[in-house]
Length: 73
Image (cartoon, rainbow, N blue to C red; front, top):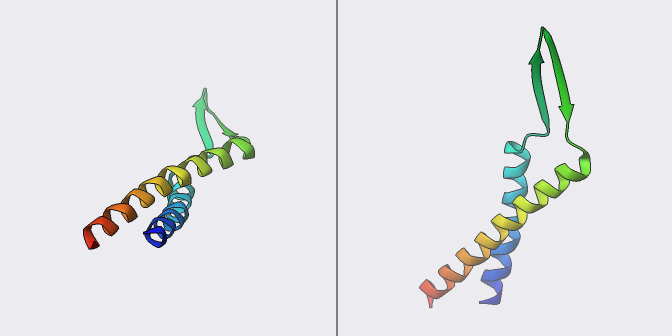
């Protein structure tokens, strides 16, 4: 059972980081009176958001590993 939980958590964390890299916006572009303005998030805030996404998916992966173990049993 421990193996299923650890594998689910690790794979979930890696998948969560990949999803975060794809879908988390790190910049905003605004258009005001003919001028485009780009503002970026600080790197620390961006890393925290990515880690939060990874941890959430890791917990879901751990739960799915538990469910698969219970089904297999």
